[in-house]
Amino acid sequence: MIRFEKADIQDAQSLVKVQVRAFAADAEICGDGPPGYDSPERQISLMNSHIYYKIVENDIIIGGFYIYPEDNGDYELVRLFIDPEYQNKGIGKSTLKYVEKMFSDIRKIELETPSFSMKNHVFYEKMGYLKIGEIKYGEDSFSYKYVKVFR
Image 1 (cartoon, helix red, strand yellow):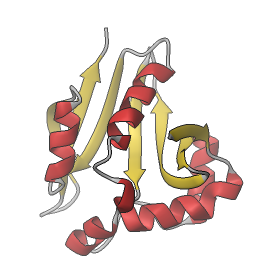
Image 2 (cartoon, rainbow, N blue to C red):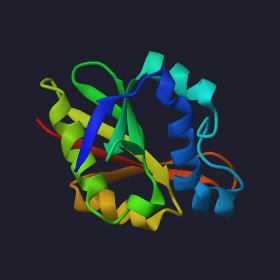
Image 3 (tube, rainbow, N blue to C red):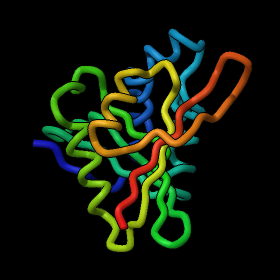
């Protein structure tokens, strides 16, 4: 059974190891993973500036997510990652449902995912998120912006 717990400094290295595995395919496609995914120091910094949770099964960290609260019940799900060994088992779905119930003031959640991550697009759309735009990072690099409105 999985559980969600606030991440702390002692979890930084484990969270990096999971992210390196989770974003290996992205790194293969575009030469690198998302910013700071392989840095324990960056994970600690994010724990101090965002709402950062680890996903745990049998006392092993198998993933994580962090959220940035904006104004008026708006939140940005900055990153959600699950070890590839644990993907396709409903953990992502359980995690999003957990995130969506975390905040009593929730109005909307925004997130972005790389244009080449078709599996992510299908997943987020199945979970009720709508594609609302593109964010260009370079000539050949862009992400899609998704949103889910709750009220």
